[in-house]
Amino acid sequence: MIRGNGTAFCAGGDIKQFARDLQSADPATIAAYNRRFGTILQRLTRAPVPVIAAIHGAAMGGGMGFAAAADITLATADTAFSLTETTLGLVPAQICPFVVDRLGAHTARRLMLTAARFRAPEAYRLGLVDEVVDDLDAAVDTLVDRIRRCAPGANALTKRLVTDCTSVDMTTVLDDAARLFGKVMLSAEARTGVDAFLSGGSPGWATDSSRAATEEVAPQ
Image 1 (cartoon, rainbow, N blue to C red):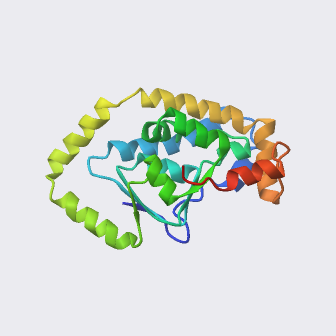
Image 2 (tube, one colour):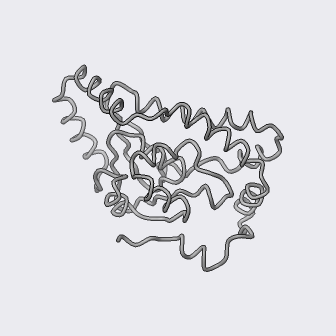
């Protein structure tokens, strides 16, 4: 099971680390660091046991990657979701193939290109969340009881079969995404976006009206 410790499941990447990375002139080093997260997500999808993500508070950026990579995703109703990378001048490199696989290319593009913020009921409608719950502990216990009725060996083989049925060359995609992230991280846009975030200001491309538009997306 994947679960957050504190008020949020995962609030995204370490922006202070991003700021330190901006001091580097080595895209390959940044790409290698970025690629490690893709490896973690790949291991979740390839694990021979069911992976449950129990989400509360917020799942931003990489947090949505965990939600998308898990086999079963539970969330409390007030959980906030957003793909925030483009607001920082970055790209959702390692999580992109997992989000696309979970939501489809069109929905993934819409959420990535608008950095839309939405709550768990909308995430359920989109297919990112499998169940919206009031009590995560009770919901996880019920789910684990159901899983235990299934033979572990059969589950492992079934999970591998499903992955094979829907597989793309994920390793190549993630390698290319890491190299892209290494290049983008050192761009002027990324420097502007990260500096604005850390200073509490707004990057030059963000207007008051555009920020308001990305704050909340009502269920459709």
